[in-house]
Image 1 (cartoon, one colour):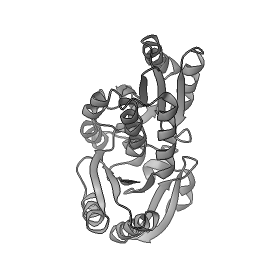
Image 2 (cartoon, rainbow, N blue to C red):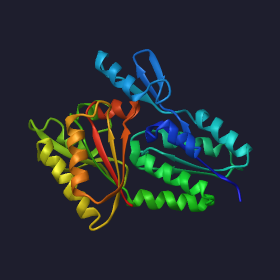
Image 3 (tube, one colour):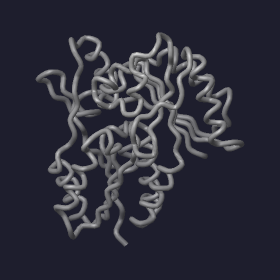
Amino acid sequence: MAKVAVVTDSTADIPREERERLGIEMVPLKVHFGDEVYLDNIDLTPGQFYQKLRAFDGLPTTSQPSPGDFLEVYKRLAESGHAIVSIHLSSAMSGTYQSAQLARSMLPDADITVIDGRSVTYGLGMLVVGAAEAAAAGASSREVVERVLALRKAVRLYFLVDTLEYLHKGGRIGRAAALFGSLLNIKPILTIDDDGVISPVEKVRGAKKAITRIGERILADFPNRPLEVTLAVTPGFTETAQDLEGHLKGTLDIRRFRIAEIGPVVGTHAGPGAAGVFVLPA
């Protein structure tokens, strides 16, 4: 049985140390500040990105990897005898998944499965890490794929942004478009739906009420269940992020808690001050 290699893209926001420990291959997207181009999470760390964002007159843009970027990685892994499971950010938000599919079609004899993660940042990261852990334990390609699909179905996401402006201008606002320009201090709770599209869950007045409602929703999603929780935040750990962490830890039965930084590509579209909660049964 061929050993399974796991491939993802940089929007999974998996810390480099964890990627290296699990042997995860990462193909980066790009961030453009005018004529300056940076490889996401390689040339530009989250801290450096948000510092540049504050100083930049305008909004940066992002671009997906080319099929050739994926082909280079797939060819190297296939030639070394690996089966490949490649998991990527929602196809509703980026052409990255399509680039990976095109690369797969160029290697018809290789064992390559490309999966639409239908999520982003550590929601995607959870799927990738789960796949890599299964592969490290000796799972077959089919078993790794089954693990990813089960995790994709199980994970819940709720997130808050300081403003919808970045999602709107970047064209990633999805079904939350109707909320753009809403009343002052209305805080929409957002999610990514089963189609991988950003969607509103509900509108509440003020961040503290939004945080309370997120906790209530997670308890309703997973009644009487111990949980694995990841808090994805932009660098600087805003007051909202601190309040969210405190509320979650005081409300939920958390067996594993981690904090992940939202990287440059995701931050381009979510904006500074975003905070997301990704939850799985422990």
